[in-house]
Figure 1 (spheres, one colour):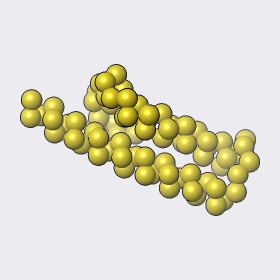
Figure 2 (cartoon, one colour; figure 1 turned 90 degrees about the horizontal axis):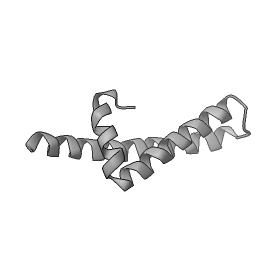
Figure 3 (tube, one colour; figure 1 turned 180 degrees about the horizontal axis):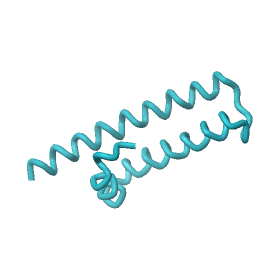
Figure 4 (cartoon, helix red, strand yellow; figure 1 turned 30 degrees about the vertical axis):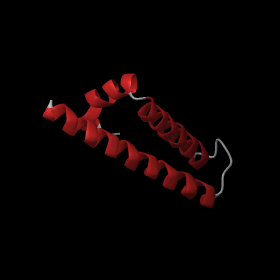
Length: 76
């Protein structure tokens, strides 16, 4: 996710607790979705779609934080 921000993600994971929470939740949902799609864990199509929407919303939030941090870094 966001390979162009790899260094910034590493930095934010050590300095921004909210970012860490969103990042960890995104990864948790990603794994849960993969497990459901692989039938390792039970889940309906609707449940998977709901989790995917939540995951996408988290990704959008992470992107906003990354863009703001990138602009702040370039201004410094």
